[in-house]
Length: 195
Length: 195
DNA sequence: GTCTATACGACGATAGAC
DNA sequence: GTCTATCGTCGTATAGAC
Image (cartoon, rainbow over all chains, first blue to last red; front, side, top):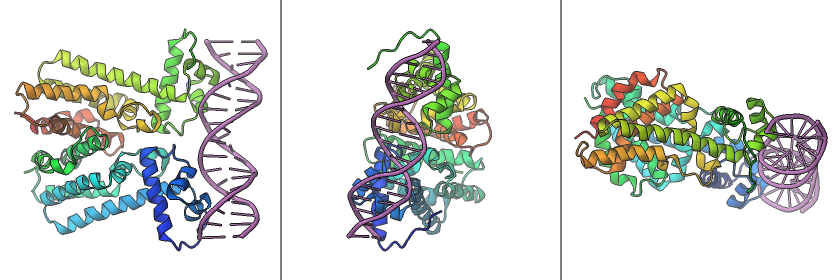
């Protein structure tokens, strides 16, 4: 493992990550060459390799960044709200808004086949944000707010519906912005598990 | 475009497709070399190129084959049953069983990012099987069996839940065979749209 | 620390014998 | 129609100047 040198400009690093997010979601990881990245970020190959060990490391960093941001958002929701009902509602609202404001990020984090290019990264289903979302449900079951049932089934019910909307939206099958559907979707989703 | 020569052995063609299904779902399309395919199918590179123009053509053929099989199954269900209730139930049952008997096929057809390696193939959301599934719902709404609502929302409700279970199953988050959950999932899913 | 130029390996695809 | 051997390309990564 090579040691990287000082990184005075966090800005350059972000530029690279931003370029990769765009490219990976449009062309895909394998169809994106380092030369593409260089061009999109408007720097040189040498600089790319000054900030990252290799192309894979960029993808890992990108996944980690986005994953952490989303996990943080979920953790904050758990702090800010104290019922499973309110937490899940806020989580779905957050995901819907993200899909509109940063579809590329949602695409990369939920839709990309990470196992194909990130060998050791766990599949998204077992990643931190979704684990936190399942935790909201587990606590709701414990408190009696949600009817007694298998946590996985509960998570499929509450989050499967909105996640399906997100996927259809990212695929342009759904044309209107997702927040339009928020309350409708929420009522359907919550009704399946409400005690 | 090159013309392919006679194909006396349909068997060899299938061997290649089978090998690719295994490899594409485990290693991914881009991490699978033609040499891998040759080895897995126990033939020579020359033979691979006798049956297919190039590597991409194999992926296209594979997607078409699997897509057609699934579309046929959905079309048969529409013929065999005459209510939206029974049709959707049968569709989900079929998908759950497929996930257990041929997880690789489900993985490839639902989970793979086809747009990354199949430029012109439409995303799975707009593919024939899912279109037929949405059609079941449209007719159910027309007949009054399903409450009046947006078709896309209805499809997210009825199929989003089981599709989420399928994804979690393919990711090994769900450990028990899906048919175990069939009736539970079905009741939750149908309850969201039943008139 | 950023650049340009280049080495090197891998892989898709073809040529040509049998 | 199946094989082996090989070609050409492309893309990652490095070397080395500034």
